[in-house]
Image (cartoon, rainbow, N blue to C red; front, side, top):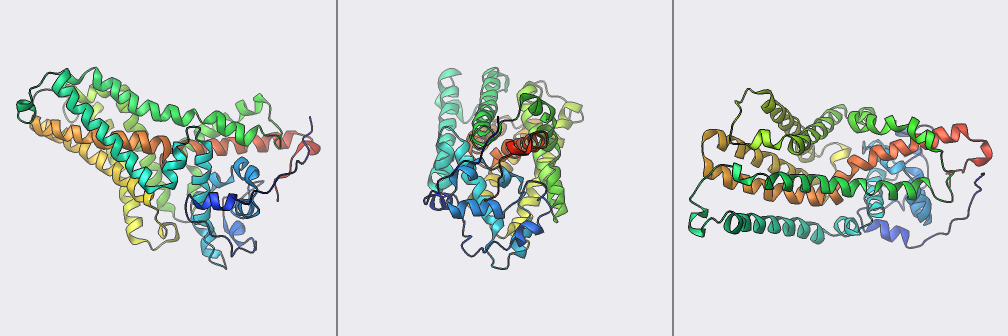
Length: 389
């Protein structure tokens, strides 16, 4: 059935809503198009940041929420460099992605965390406090350890199984389930509206490889002028996925009291994942400290908290591992407890509602765009709904 051009009502509150999620000041933009021309990622029907910013300025909430283009942006910064009015379109696109993340979340939690530093930090500290109380309750009541022995008596790690396995699965799989539970909502907002010609299921199947390809390769980032940034980002993503996979499927290998030798292949996986994560984090911190390039000039609050939490998680886990091999059982226990206290809020808060969400949203958006474009090529001209303002 042909889909006509439907009228869209302008919402004068849209711009104020977007600005709650970060810096968004495109009022100096006079639509010269320099930003769009400068971006190597703009191709075919994908045109940004000009179109997305235009939607916001005109109050076109529905077309903006339906738009997938802000996720094609990989934060290269070329657009801000060429902008003759210094309107910083790169920062505007970053804010738009935060705004869209809040629209996708059906719980409403992401909206609060992305708008408020107090909510964000409060959530991290609250989850950490809950974990500390759970650790105390486990040792004092479940294990039955006297208070006088709590800080003086070391014992093996086998007492934690299988509880620690269930705990680890929960704090890793729950955020992933929350992320993927939004896939249907994103599809409904971006692919099934009245203004959209709904592609047939066969096209979704044919283009499914796009999602996995971009999830694994991050290939569009290689088009950015800062080539080394891709390697750091890819290493961080790969190392994180490897470590999460190890925790889900091989936790017993790495925590059992029957220690494997350091040269065992099962250990190599953990060391490789740790090395990749640390390499990516060093790349992030060096870039933020120098702040000489456009992509590092504007650092938001969460841009720093997330990598700090991740590096503390990695270092505390590595320290617990080293203390265990060195025979410092009591020190290992306290370090491992600290590791869990840091890692749990990072996973439950950051992975579910923070910056980690883009690991699902970005490849999903690229996949949906590929479906749209294939459907547009196969559909008669009368069925295609123009996206231009």
